[in-house]
Length: 281
Image 1 (cartoon, rainbow, N blue to C red):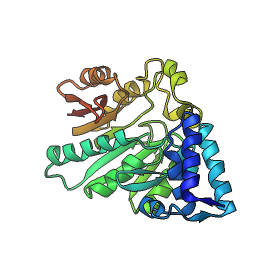
Image 2: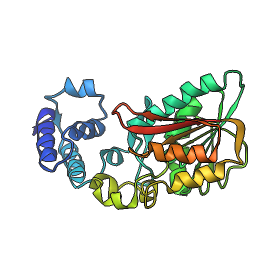
Image 3: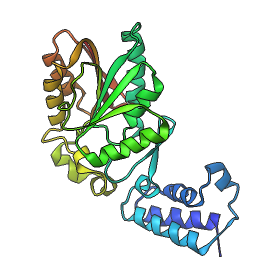
């Protein structure tokens, strides 16, 4: 016989010893018991069944070996909504919520009178950015592109579950996009190839490499996007990129070179790292 509090204590110690987040045990147990946090913590003396203990212990051990908790439970929270994730998509990060917030704020100022705005999200993955933008601003007509059909399948499922209208396009960066763009957003792969081996095994051994590696200096996808977008942007347009820490000035320079006269700003995230670049043309 094992109580909830005993299972949580065991998981915490086991994960700490393995060098993982010791709080992951609570997320996994909540998942297996289908309980909100407040309910779980008010039932610490609940007796777990043998089946529950076995399933929970198995997942705790998998996380100790490096599997992300989000893949084990099958979802991640983003902008107050639950997005399904699996090994075919990058797990949405809190920093990307700041990118979405920045787009929403700037769109209201930069396009005050527009009835509709065509938004394109490049490298959509789980669809977190595209779906959130579509749900947060009714003026946005959103399209999203991914090179992997497996990723698009996840994004389509998320859109269906959350009631979002997004056009999904399968292709390489801007190649399948035909309409003019008012707002271009992308969180592309930006980790320099040499840095991949330094990442946590939870990331490098489990999340899709196509969503991580950005070439020798991490800027390959920005160069391609900036080169290809010029003919697709409307005369008045907003560009929003998530970037790796330390890449702000480089990406800003690429944009200023390609779009003379554009107002380009590097924005720091809540952790004080340069994380976003916005440009208005």
